[in-house]
Length: 135
Image 1 (cartoon, rainbow, N blue to C red):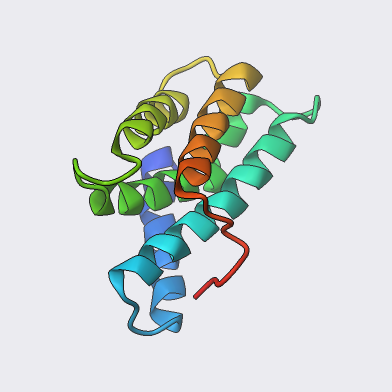
Image 2 (cartoon, helix red, strand yellow):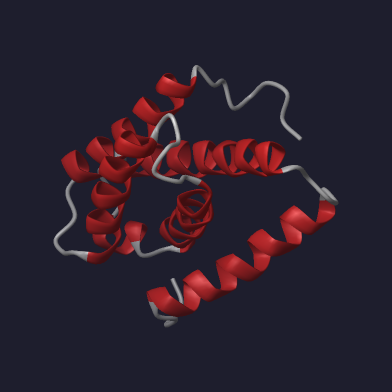
């Protein structure tokens, strides 16, 4: 991994994320929300999968592009979830767990999996399959 800080990776990830969104053109707020969930699902599955490999340092992995992409995607969804949103309370739990995972050390597999389960709980409450009707 290069010598970039996590903040620099987050900034780079945000730029890449914006390019991905721009490629899809104008979206309704509902389409944008679903798009963010789809991307987060991809990033979380990769992070959890790589985290389960014994050869990788979790602290380094969480601070990698995957962690940065999860932070950016989570921030985008966080802005779209108001206090009256169906998953507001679940999302607050997810937000806290993910922020803790990304910014506190040491990282453990349990922290990675718990944050991921919080994300999955949000999808479940939405009865959302991020692989269908993706914008």
